[in-house]
Length: 112
Length: 82
Image 1 (spheres, each protein chain N blue to C red):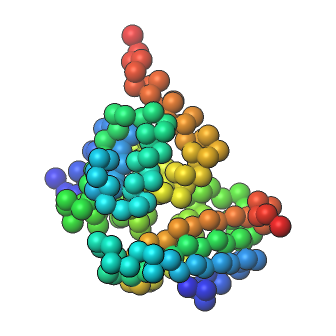
Image 2: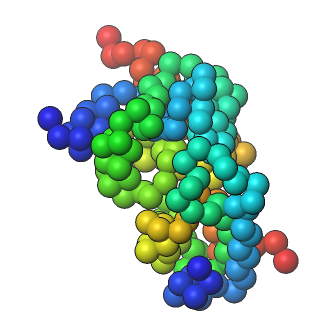
Image 3: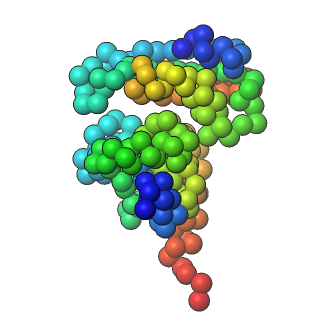
């Protein structure tokens, strides 16, 4: 599987995915730490995080995949939401909470 | 940076170099940390992703070389505080 395929599988197979430097427990970049903090404030606990520092191919690959030159990158329902600035702005306006709520409702109540 | 961002015809452009605050942190060797605030008519009606992409595109060569981190506030003239 190519890196692009691997990334595609990860972001489309999970409702919320964060590509970051370090881990939610030990972020290794201020911007990544900010997004982790915001996820916590939104009450999102079971998101998938990918530490790009652990894999140089993913670190470069995610920039191409998202057509976005920086990390962190937050994906919801397979779509790139943005980096730290956008996530913060959307949190401040409440848009992020709304978006994450939709996803959690969608995943916690599967069709009968 | 200023020259490259001129393609967006900004009405206001502020570039802060915050590199000194991040000197020596892991992975920062490759470039500087910057914070820009830009007001441009091109952003009107564009999504946040699209706005940031416009800025990244204008700075493309620098994003690969010279800029390590970039914080962006991109506003249309209507949204900008006077």
